[in-house]
Amino acid sequence: MNEGINLSQAAFGDYFIIASMLMLTGFYCMWVTHNLIRVLIGVELMTKGVTLILAAAGYLTGNTGASQAFIITLIVMEVVILVAAAGVVIGHFRKCGDLDTRRMNNLKG
Figure 1 (cartoon, one colour):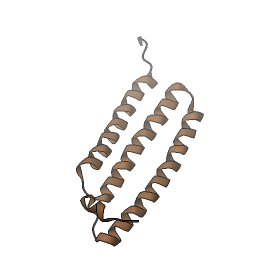
Figure 2: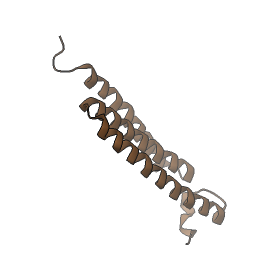
Figure 3: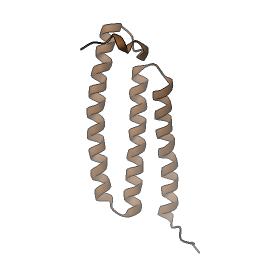
Figure 4: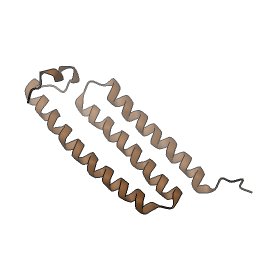
């Protein structure tokens, strides 16, 4: 017999491992690279990991409505941040001609 662990709790562990790997990959991508596009991809990977955790937690607790509301809010915030960051990347590329983060101090309003 099952001793206190049902199928949904075991599946949550798998989702948590995958989401943690996504978040660690995104953090590694942001930390190691000097390319602004790769930094944006790292941010996207991290937010996808958080989205997966929210969806799995909502399913596990049976409160999918609240988790869906949080996920939609996270997606909207993610799009706003991505658009603002893409504007900074475009401005930096027009000013410097490359996407290197080490030259970001040359970007002025």
